[in-house]
Figure 1 (cartoon, one colour):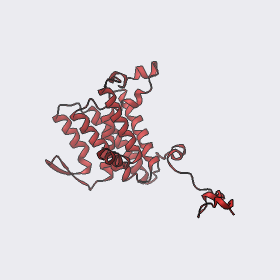
Figure 2 (tube, rainbow, N blue to C red):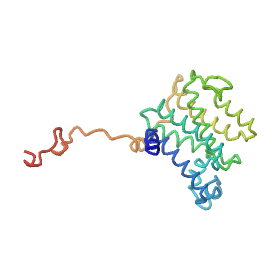
Figure 3 (cartoon, one colour):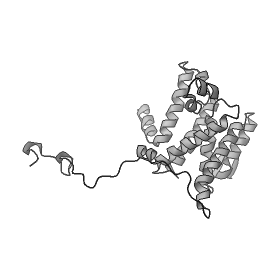
Figure 4 (cartoon, helix red, strand yellow):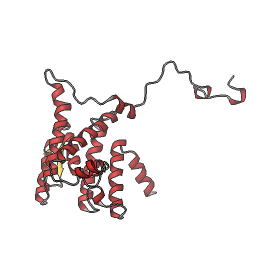
Length: 236
């Protein structure tokens, strides 16, 4: 019963968030069970270019470390803000949300070639948090019951939290930079005088996620028409 309820709750999560979350959990579980090694997953431009290990372009975003506090903390923020974006400002725009994933991930990869970071999932999460926070500027948050602040300050609060824990903040900064680039090009620049939308989703991506329009000239089969099909009388 508990498993069924968990599965029902999981299936209620929007498709992009659900797929990304499942990929992260399965990747971490595979590492935990010694099915694969983190050395097969980390971002390495040399191995990608010279040895054609192109899967690293994806797996670098899927591994948040071994099971523990850091993993659950990162997944909590990833699922929460990814889902709120997909159900909020991207509601009914799955193709646009997926395209944002592609653009953000690609830009993080480009910047990742110049910073010494093996896994970029945290930067991706920070990007999602940044975009959500800028699109919900009046939303008030409480951080572990310690401080209250408005949403746009959330990325900086998380960066400060990383500093307190003694972690590198490079990935946080990368995520903020990429998030701001997307926010500016998608939300700010098009609304300026002379501005226009630069990040329009390609039609082939829209085709993958959106149902094609109904053909007004389509004549359905008898069994598909309203009222069904009377098999005993051969449709007459």
